[in-house]
Picture 1 (cartoon, rainbow, N blue to C red):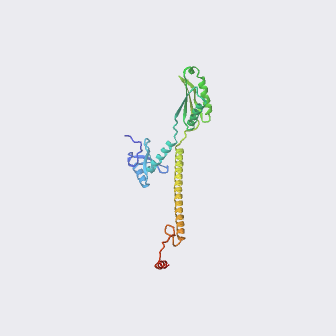
Picture 2 (cartoon, one colour):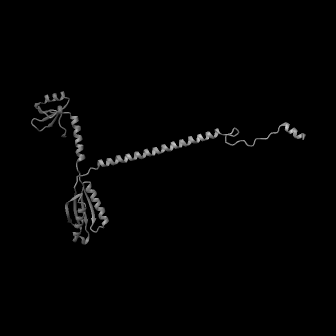
Picture 3 (cartoon, one colour):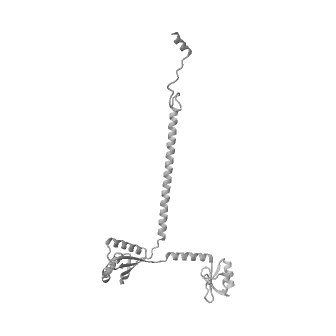
Amino acid sequence: MISDEPRINDEIRVSQVRLIGPNGEQVGIIATSVALNLAKEANLDLVEVAPKAKPPVAKLIDYGKFKYNEKIKAREARRNQSTSEIKEIRFRLKIDDHDFEVKKGHVQRFLSAGDKVKVTIMLRGREQSRPIGGVELLRQLAEDVSDLGTVEFAPKQEGRNIIMTLAPKGKKVHTQSEQRRRGEQSRAERQARQAARLAAKGGEKEARQEAESSAEETVAKIDATKAPGQSAGGRANTSPKKTKSKEGSNAEDEK
């Protein structure tokens, strides 16, 4: 299996190489063993960058850092590349105004995202012998969205259909950053709502504690102002038992 990785250090089997220094300076043609010693002294790697040259071209670089930078560049290239898609919109020739506006909104959304749009009008029966109405309808649509796209292929009848292709004026819009921003925004909103609920619960707990403490203070004040003859339940003993002494009973007997 042939590897796409360049040969480095002891993998370089040729006797001589054209050496390039770590800062891009031209060292010249030297023996491979000498180049390897220079790489070890500089704590770098000897990387073969042009194996088909005579002699092969090698460079002194930090291969691990070089691989990392190449990976970052490839990731950025994939992120910035434009992958345009062709969306398709279909409708009948006899379409009412509301449905036409809805279809036009879809076309505008696709063009705004940087995608091409293939618009197809489907003809039925005698409509195939009079395609001019469909052509005019497509031209009207192209004029309505002219600020977002241009006509790439003019309206043309193909069998029972009339087809027109619109191309966006701008490049493909990358929605990844926008989706990330929306996700962060919704996450922040959820955290704010959760913090508000926790604060509300904390306020209710504090209010309940204040009410309980106030009630305890009120009860304490009432207990402090009670009469000595009152019972613990707050009611005084208003009907004491009547007792007759012996002297009282004897006096009554004498009378």
